[in-house]
Image 1 (cartoon, rainbow, N blue to C red):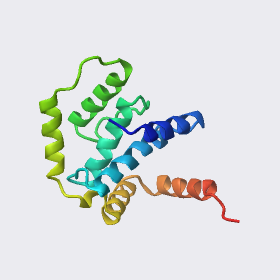
Image 2: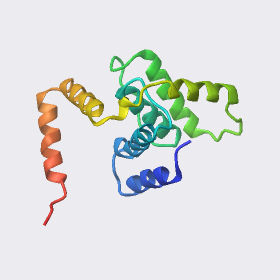
Image 3: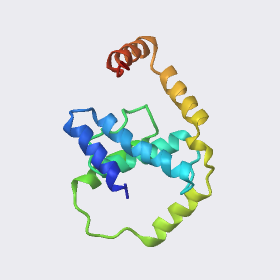
Image 4: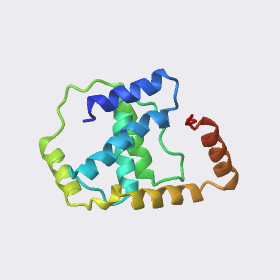
Length: 150
């Protein structure tokens, strides 16, 4: 369950007209904090990000599932399921046994997935797949939208 502040920040992003990926970023940020605090771990930075995106979809962020071929079919199906879950109010309580098992499995994972180095590696690997023109466009946009220190 995401924290109230995270949902508030995501809602604020939505009200400001920011992209769904920006809204989802708040949930990913929360997940990284949880790992750094030692609440649980993750096998990789990619898994930590995936957990955050899943939470975002379930919280109602209109984040589309990944395009075909970008990730495994299983991940795409789960993303669709997460989006559907946000659409309906669930009165059914989640299985305590299943929740406990999932939490226990994450607790066994290393905490290094949220390290600066791991996140940097993940970002570089993701950027490399995007191509030069796309990276250039992103860099120019970042430079344009960067807050100026005066």
